[in-house]
Length: 256
Image 1 (cartoon, rainbow, N blue to C red):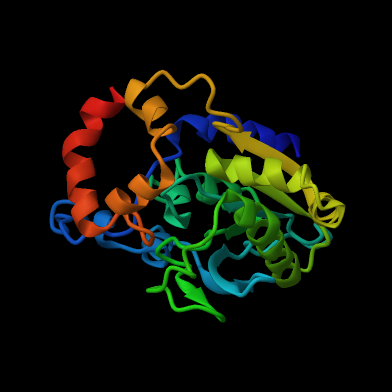
Image 2 (cartoon, one colour):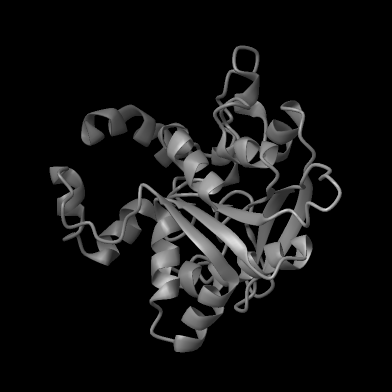
């Protein structure tokens, strides 16, 4: 696990924030901007497998696996690691840079069995056994459900496929929040299941509280009534194409 810690330190500054493929991407100038996570992995010369994790409340999460390279005789099974993305992000955040600067590739090169997670509602996890994704019911969740259901479902899937009883977990931003919540869950059964499954927890840009936010706009949004936010932002996928256009125009000034 010392090797894992060293790799995390080296890669902490290059975890990219990325949304799913934009219809306005310039594919000729930036080919990677028009590739999904599977295509990105293959284009860098790595094998990839699709893994599905179904949560206890019926969400079907699409994961990707970079299976371990052939190991030397007597080396034992490859240790498994689950990489969990941040807010408004997806699994391609771990492979969006080149081979020498993408955490998933760095771990694979060092013998890990790498699993890339996707929370409910992102572009790779838009299915549910109970609801259609064009209904409000599909989108009626928060970080709490990601902590209670998505974390353990993906850990269990990684353990099942890798054959390992324990899985290392690396989260970025929101990916750390849901693990903090899972490990401190008021339902002791949830916390115990997660703690039993995780071998080590690496937190990149960890977040739990927003007390020290410096952006005036974001702080004021916390006081806006929920009904107003739903009216402006909608109750389903965010951002929509229109909202994405607005964000690209105004976000640099708001976040500066």
